[in-house]
Length: 531
Ligand SMILES: *Cc1c(COP(=O)(O)O)cnc(C)c1O
Ligand code: SF4
Image (tube, rainbow, N blue to C red; front, side, top):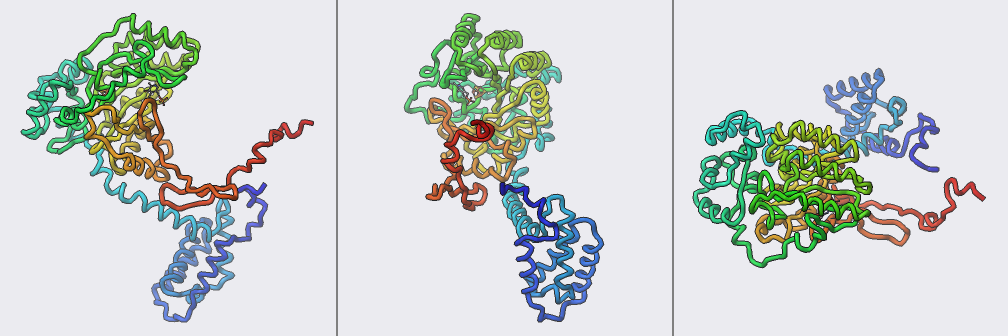
């Protein structure tokens, strides 16, 4: 039973190997230098006095830390400061007795503190750059508010219209002429974008447009919402649309036995330039018939393996409340359906849509069976005080809010940008769930694709550096979701152990595996008492 709680029956006056090594280092330093400057003598005398009086660990740590520095840098042992070993031994004992977990002075000073210092260095670059390289919409809020005033005026929108979903949709921007008056577009881009919008639909809500920073080239909001010439230039090989090969029933997509999606609408509030469903999203708004929904529901009803149903689109939140209410009630009535998800980007593209009635519908369904809201946020710039507040309100009414980001060149393809995204959305009540590698199936956006190795480096770099539950899974979509994470198993060794690698610093550690014979023995725990 040699687990980690053995130290309770160890005499507390005892110290460990680290403290023993610390004493050796300190007193091996040599004290031939007798000319210790007066001020350093005084410093040590004061640190010693404080360490003796204290009932805290800090002053003791300060004294040892100073002495260790002196030993290392100036080859001065404690003797040079007229401190003998028994004095330090007393203080080492005291340190350990004060500490709730009996941490030794040697362990803390020579092991834990250097690890913390090394860890801190790993985030220095991120902390220095995150707010300039990847500012959130919260940090940019003053500029966004100025943009909103300007856009409202240019579109002759009233405040009431601005704060309502119908107002945002009625004034949404689908012509390049209007857009050119609101955001900084290079002159040369206008003609090319006009051509693209003949083939691919563009629609920005005034709210989403206000997130674009004036004067910024390749602004991450612009990249996601304004189509560029590449979308047509790239088009070459036509890859069969996803809809054809994964739809076993009307409106249904299915790869998996236990989860299906209902593509409940082809409408979105804003059309993304990197949309996986670009082939059937947004050409023309369609209202689906009850027949279509009923056929989809029948497929689910008759297939008892299905336990999790994703209502997606398009965007589930552009459906009228009455339709969502009906769909959720129908799903909740099916015994084998145990969970639901709603897929929506509305909280970042037009948060005004999320009204109390919708929240009540979500909560009522969640009370029957858990419901998750799955969103798509690709840059911290999409999190404003408004979208954050919207996610806060949603998160109070459902099981959880999850994010599926797409890895996109220029938008989130660096450590700083992706870390900032994951931390910012977590602070906005949203849990990072997936990062999708940008699909190869749509030539329209090959210019956004990021090499797999770059994505792996970014995702791996998060381990040990940001909260574990802010780290998404890295996924390729290729007829289902395929994990892309790099293995941290370096080798499997003969002695039933593995060599593992710490993703954050490359350090290798030996990791003993479970004993296979012991694992094969079923006669264990309570079964062990049976004859
Ligand atoms: C993404 C997706 C799912 C859900 O997959 P999870 O890994 O459970 O999030 C289910 N069906 C289809 C068709 C999908 O595209
Ligand atoms: S919200 Fe989703 S479905 Fe709609 S355009 Fe964007 S990526 Fe496509």
